[in-house]
Length: 137
Length: 454
Image 1 (cartoon, rainbow over the protein chains, first blue to last red):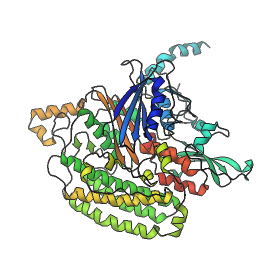
Image 2: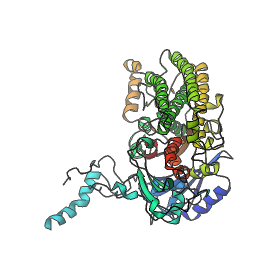
Image 3: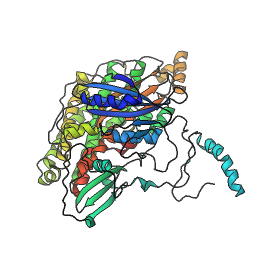
Image 4: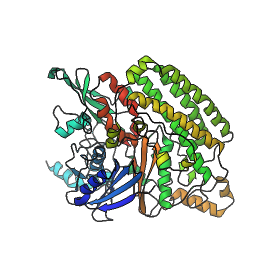
């Protein structure tokens, strides 16, 4: 089952989502981000999957987010299921979803530094620190 | 003072060395895990989400209760009925749940990041650990996405084995859901029964794959090994015993007045709310909408099997329990057909660049040795592109999105876990009902925290 891919811009993104919602695309299935670090400009690409149950079709929207501000409108008011996904994208990539009701970290602890799924965030070298363990100097 | 400046001078350098990261250092002090907590006063949008009135406003609150009776209580993360480490904060007004906020992330192990470090050959080892109750589905979705990117089709026998194993896995996963759900509500015999029957299937998995869970059996290009000798006998035994035992469950629970009283008309989820919150799988079918990816968007040759999609219209906890029992019967039908029409032939694709040659060929053929070495050291390359594939896991739509940059490792691997999305509907089904029903509501959604946090 292949899905139709629509490339759009940040300005048109929300309008397009609204039109999809009125075209019987009942579900926003998935929202994720791809970090094209040093490969593409602008750097972050938001990929949203939509599913129409009545028409049995899928559509994919791809949006590149400007490097300045890293912000894109939230679609939580159209599809409430976007809530957790946008929080995850904020947590993992630092994308700001404007007018999101509760844009906080969801998987990482609230006071974590950095956004782990970015390509310039190294993996596997952060030592595990247990609570009340002697501090490493 | 002097010491501090020197420390700051090397701080950036030290951080980069320690974390191999341009993103800054880490917070070495212990983290404040309680800071996502629910507040006494929230903004209007937040309240709508936390009271579950975002889509349909069916919230009735007793105006007579005073503010003194309102309190925020914490449930979990270490709580036996939260199925792992799910933490909930609920505002209670007397006995009634007013607002709910699920707090997740206690089992976050960065599997999507790990997925970028492993090549496609090693990938299933990682994804199989996400939804640990249905590991074969995770392997299947990763393999299907990789195969779609390469553009290959696996042999018929491999397809049939995949269907056989995943449907058995669906049965074992639903049995755990029935068992733990029964335990949460107080039907303790159900707990023992469900795990007892699951053992039959896990024994078969152990015989076939070598492991009871986290199999790494379905791999890009086919499956890891052929079915063991005498597998037909084991399947026949499963097909004989499980329907008898399911009859026992029905005798025990279907007309049980306590069971019905606890579950009927509790935690109602309408079709509209399911669509809005992205709820798929048994929960959507229990809300009166017939939607099954096995029928609508078939994968791995499941369109050749005859089965029905059970649908119930009530949308309450009872319907979500009942639909799992009915789905086990349908899965048994598929397993029986897979047993009867298992084709002969290779169980993996005969492309030596993608699947390793059999062990005994290594002693005879230089080429086989080279292919083996290449696959186990650097893996195989996948053409540039991206693909999203979704399959019907026991909890709903399980999707995998892979972006490839032409190398042997995924550039980005994202798994759309059904539990993660279904959890958003928790406020809808928990609010405006007594605290005693909260546990039944969580159990009916059947979240697996490994799938939520990944």
